[in-house]
Image 1 (cartoon, rainbow, N blue to C red):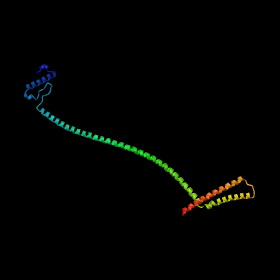
Image 2 (cartoon, rainbow, N blue to C red):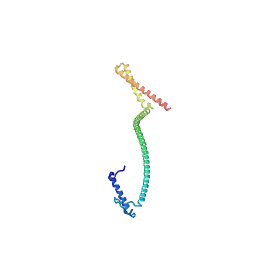
Image 3 (tube, rainbow, N blue to C red):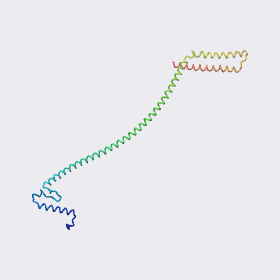
Image 4 (spheres, one colour):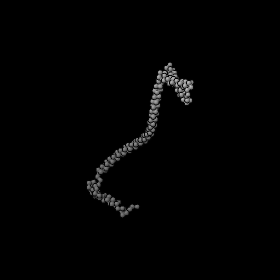
Length: 226
């Protein structure tokens, strides 16, 4: 059912009125002035015959530009996708490098602990070496002392035997004097007698032990020389 003119809303009324007025002016003017001077209600000129061609050209240019922009957008999208893939690859490489760095840090800590233990062991070995060196020095000194003693005992009859024999003869003479006094009937205290006997016995015992030691050393030296 068609609406009456009064039922049409105001904006549409103005549009219809403007269209009708423009058509009335167009048909009222001469044909030569149809595209030259007609004016619309808004003050604009009517479309010229060349205007659709220009619009078509602009439309074609816009379509061409749009197509070119579409290709650029597609190219940029492809580049963006490639960059995203490269970024993902680099991120994966970064995670791998971080893992390797973590492993290297663990190995470095282990090596540092081993170096610390080795240093402790080196300090301990240095202490043991110093102690061994001291013991070696003591042994060398003892060897020198023994060498001197062996050298002094290689010919004991020249240096020590006369003194020892003299000492022994003195003890024997003392005992002879005591014996003669007893034979003569002279008194001598028992304490003095026991003291002299013990003294002489000890001297003879020491001399015998010394002679035995010297005899053993001389015999051993003779065997080594052979």
